[in-house]
Length: 90
Image 1: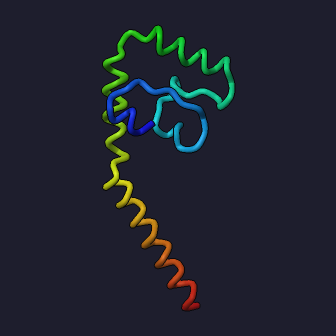
Image 2 (image 1 turned 180 degrees about the vertical axis):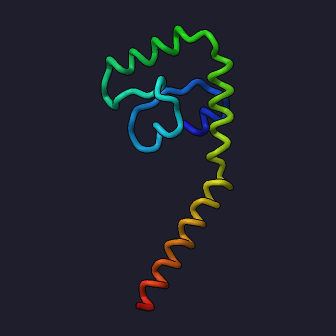
Image 3 (image 1 turned 120 degrees about the horizontal axis):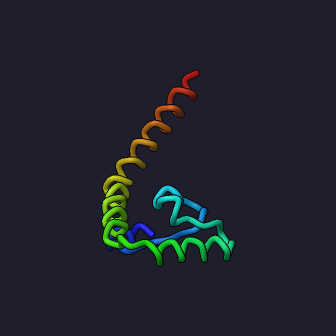
């Protein structure tokens, strides 16, 4: 999904894994719920400003660049390591 967003594609997705944090609620459906998938597809079809959706997706995808994610992972790792170091000293 992030790769498609980075290419300014209009994306829809299910409510599983990390997809909901990537997309606006209007583009999310309950996994396996055909009625909700149809609702989202109809919404996208009727939406008149595709350029706005594409721009939003492109801009939002920048928050998930490899460098930014690596920095977040490194911070989490260092915090966890510090926690383990402090708990073994007790």
